[in-house]
Length: 426
Image 1 (cartoon, rainbow, N blue to C red):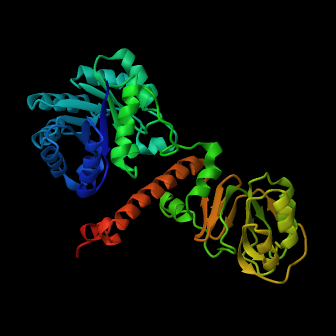
Image 2: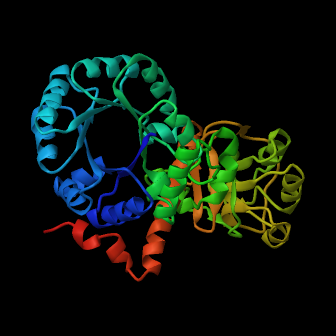
Image 3: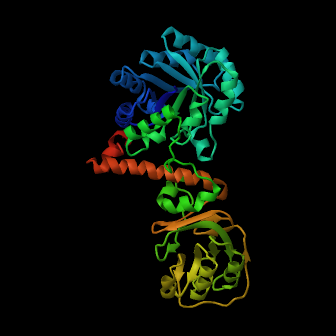
């Protein structure tokens, strides 16, 4: 039966050790000091894991690209039973790391993340002395929907080395992964779970019974799920995922209603409501109209247009300019955002266009970009990043949920964020 390894990709040793304790209680086989943990805490993370869990296989995920002998020896001396380096490293680096590991009775794992031809490189690393080859789609690749299982399947047919598989492994796909790998490396499906012990037991049971366990948790979503995901998370979650890009400034969500959808853009001028109304005829259900009205003071949107928008099943309207009839639109419960509110409108002159790239609240918006709004604000997600950012926003939400659980157990926000540890000195 395949071994279950938990990747402790934390930056704080205390949090990593707590997760390790819960995973061990659930029956995990191997404990990995993840690369973020090693970068943050150094070899002390490996030493402490070995001290607290001497009967478990301790993996040091070094992500080494150079000085293979030195870094492998450092990890082995600290208590690592398995040392993981990058398969993309030079042949000499892989060979030297393999020699160092053998000298200390440890095994060398090579991680295929980032390799253009992963199967060919895995076979080459086996010849250089690697005993475990890890098929791995990294977190950034996973967010874009890339998986590792196909690589592992191909490797299983072509190598005698042990195969590990990492990247998005959970209770739904772990049985499939176990068919082609000896070591199943799980991160978020254990460390992000509300009960890591229970999550580990579920994974172990799935491996033993060869029956996957269906779950919505940690599912990676695709194009068809975007509205569902963006409505589940908050605009602060999305802003964090975007690294604080995409916030529309100065335009307010008038009723605080939540909405999400792909944009149909409109360019018009102060008070000219012709193109915004014409855009309703071209908008698909679920669309968000984003109207650049040059920040004007005369309304280009009102109650009659809102009634039409509801009939057309428009998800929301964002106006960098003025709207009116706010009291009546509120009753209609159509999400409307605007820079200004005015009783006056202009005339339908027909200037402008539908579908161009526009600027709204200081942000570039193209038709097809995703626009999400709630009580906190409005965020634009570029169309080509939408799937990735939806998954990243979910990851932000899950991480915050873990912090909330620690706060409910009595810790302060300063403590769970380790502010004193990370604050700048001097």
